[in-house]
Amino acid sequence: MTLPWPWVAYYRVSTDKQGRSGLGLEAQQEAIQSFLDSGSWTLAAEVTEVESGKRNDRPELDQALGLCRLYGATLVVAKLDRLARNVAFISKLMESNIDLVAADFPQANRLTIHILAIAMITQRTIPQG
Image 1 (cartoon, helix red, strand yellow):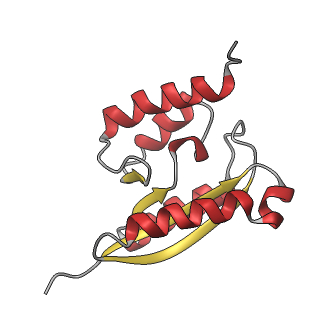
Image 2: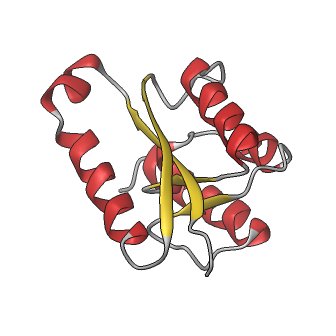
């Protein structure tokens, strides 16, 4: 019998208003739940942070990474852009040796995640027009 793989979910909303309304949070929870329902898994922990994606000091993300180490779990996020708006931050996260999966693109490997992060962050932060 195969034991279920442990996961730690990390949700981030930018403002208290988003957090209280559940709008951004509910969508992230649904995306992760849908992804995890496709396999054998155990959700070891869920961590929610209300913080701007511009900030690099994230106590709740640090807690999620610590839980990943404790449980030997993979960090799962709904979308890469929920982690940061800074490619250097995502690179640092990738160097932490914690496995990371984005529910919107679970096939991505470390190189793909770096490339996607650059593309997503650029698309969200550079005015189109």
